[in-house]
Amino acid sequence: MGAAGRDYHDFNAVFRGREEIDVVGFTQAPGQNLGELDETDRRYPSELAGEGYPDGIPIEPERRLETLVADHDVDQVVFSYSDVAHEHVMHLASRALAAGADFRIVGPDEMMLPTAVPVLAVDAVRTGCGKSQAAGAFADALDARGHEVRIVREPMPYGELAANRVQRFASHDDLDAAGVTIEEREEYEQHIDAGHVVFAGVDYEAVRDAAQSEADVIVWDGGNNELPFLRPDLHVVLADPLRAGDEVAYHPGEANLRRADRVIVNKENSAAAEAVETVVENVRSVAPDAEISHADSVVSVADPDRIAGASVLCIEDGPTLTHGDASRGAAAVAAERYGARERIDPTDAAVGSIADTLAEYPHLDRVLPAMGYSDAQIADLERTIRNADCDLVLAGTPHRLERQVSVDVPIAQVEYDVALHDTTFDALLDRHADAIGL
Image 1 (spheres, rainbow, N blue to C red):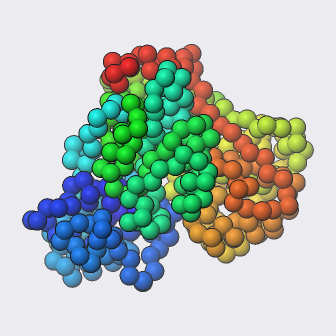
Image 2 (image 1 turned 90 degrees about the vertical axis):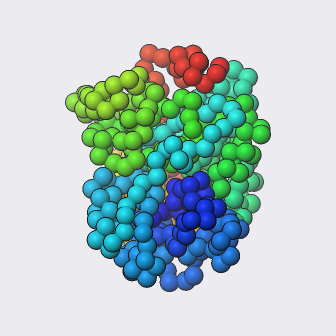
Image 3 (image 1 turned 180 degrees about the vertical axis):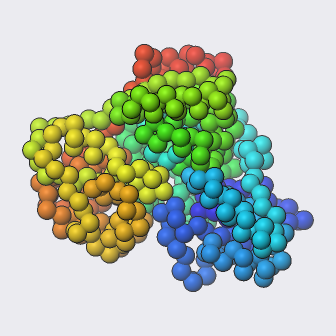
């Protein structure tokens, strides 16, 4: 059971090539920004599935779980996706058990791959904690020390799976050539702009081999709140006091927390002191050996004066708002900090798939998620922005929105960084130098 990421890795790392096991299908979750599968023939390709699967492996909607168990006399259902509540996981377990199958989650000892170079993994307890900014800061600090750093990113294989077995992105031309989605650009562009090469793909043994052939240190930039696919020498996990309590309520974020060497409590400048203390208490309860750092999420805009008194449309990082459950993001923070007259509600301006997204996520607080999983959805996003009656668009998405949409209203990019209290990312490398062999 998956969402086009960890499920493929679990198959490749644990089940592929085993003659005693027949994997009869993948199911794809309706959420996770993937939408619902249509009824066309979707398959994990034979080129990746390997011997025993000459026709590939069918990918079915998750709603067909019970039917698949019955039709194929399934012995075991394996849960393989992230950023879902513990209760959600157990509801799925109950469905599998009621259908007559065992229910399993693959553990890290089986699915984490060893590497020939040190790995510094940055993960989180939920989507949208600031892990990519922290991963980038660690990569910058390693680069400044003269290390050859490569970033390996959790997969987002929305295109042709066999063609995306190994992906290497060193420039915006590479992103354009690969035809990546807006979500992928949100994760890759910031690293590329900082001068770092990013690896991703579908087959992480091959991804690992390609990355470590160029690197003396790998920085793993985790997706959602997923466990690292590469076995880390240093495991840093971010927590978010704006969603206090989630660090022990979501899968596999709690597992990440319990395995952390260091926990960074981020966004403390936007959170109540009581919420910060709740997170710290939970960290101390489930990960007593982890060291704790405190940090602010610092928001900035190149020309803040144009925000003062303006009517603004706030566009935010899509996954943070949708399956991350945040009601707003950095753009909304910037609007308030720099004195915008109003944040407009995009609901009436929304068209097509963007209108559907806003209806699906009613918790959003006058913000627009940067959805762009197809050319048609990017066109809907562009039309929605054009329909909005605003003076300025504040783009809190980590990629450059103007590269994807053409609108008449000016777009101001909102930057945000993880600012550690009383220390630096370079100092943290010193603190953990022995672990990562520096």
